[in-house]
Length: 80
Image 1 (tube, rainbow, N blue to C red):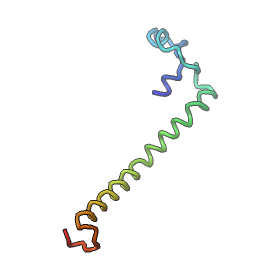
Image 2 (image 1 turned 90 degrees about the vertical axis):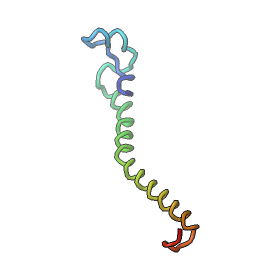
Image 3 (image 1 turned 180 degrees about the vertical axis):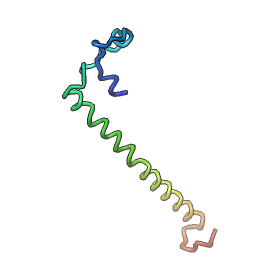
Image 4 (image 1 turned 45 degrees about the vertical axis):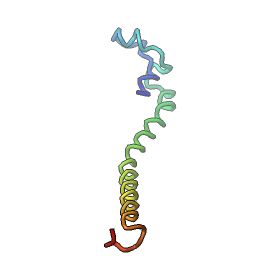
């Protein structure tokens, strides 16, 4: 979405793009486009790469805390 917002379709052969989406600053994949959009794309990729690990860790911690609460915060694994 960010790439479409910053795109300038003034040179497009499609009239609907050319007439409605000419608000962007970059007309092509120029150095400025890469400088502005590149870090956002890389950040999104890193977020997507590490999110499953973070989600697994959070679920494990929540599950462990619920088990501790169930046994009334003792170390006896057989108490419920």
